[in-house]
Length: 191
Image (cartoon, rainbow, N blue to C red; front, side, top):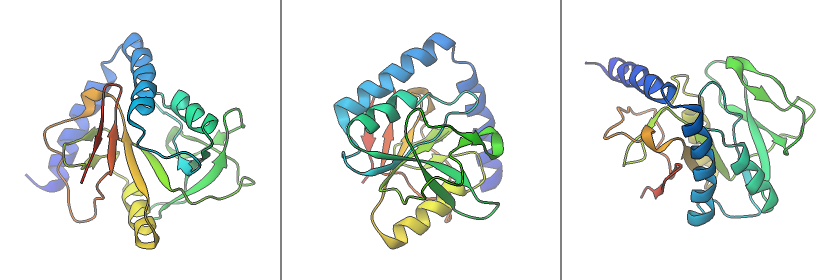
């Protein structure tokens, strides 16, 4: 099986696993995610943090972003610039208006300040105990992390449901490892 086939197979399985969660499980998970952040503190206060606006059946990180904002973090949301390009991050605060982006995302308008994050909350389909992440397949976060890490230290925090942790995520030379995994039940730092 090729790397692409292995990723595609896991991608399909994880979409089904995440899609099977009930609304109540999702509500409880969002509260659990916030509790894990408060207990483990993978992100220091007074830093620029890129979040993401949850789409489809991703875990709702909006309460987590509001908490970070209340603790003094500046927030940003990602903007897809185009195929093969890294993400751009624009300033955002809870309550700010958003506009439609690609892939069903919402993003700050072009008039918002561009920021470079110190920490990124990264969406995922799966993560393993080594910090390897399976995303949606566009490579946007991998390209972005590679560029940011070439310039300075940044912290990549994968965010998802605890059920998205798997024994092994297939990965290749272009994939970037996470520094942390934050779920509704635990946080794990990867060395």
